[in-house]
Image 1: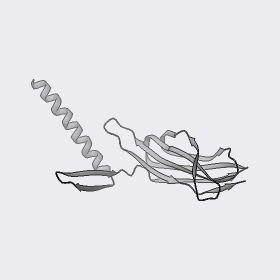
Image 2: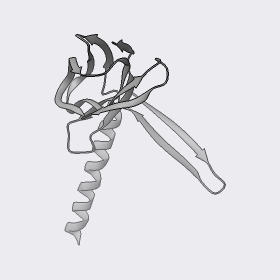
Image 3: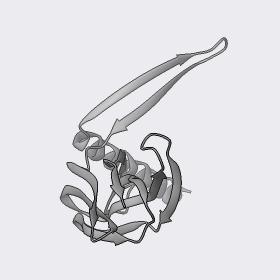
Length: 157
């Protein structure tokens, strides 16, 4: 029984130490307090700051849609890049519908750069919506960060 108590104590200590080290690296904490009739709930929302630069843009290149994107971090990540990538189309430049869904583009490292990624499309206006994504390396509760973004629009003739 004493051996089991020591093991449990060590595990709890490791979790506590890991939580404190992660908390000290976090840029900001926002606490939201929600009160209901019977209880008060405190929601702890972390702003991780893993992504330090992100951008996405589109252009017409040889009659095709060309996508340029960048997601960078100051540290090597287990995963970094783009998720939930959707090319949207419009006939008038203001009413957008999902046109093509692309696979996630994630790599290991500190930056993911997409340069003139070409997609065949028909005549119309196009833009890209995506989530810039980064996930830390680590065994004990690695943080991740997602930043949603929408590109400029371009007319392809």
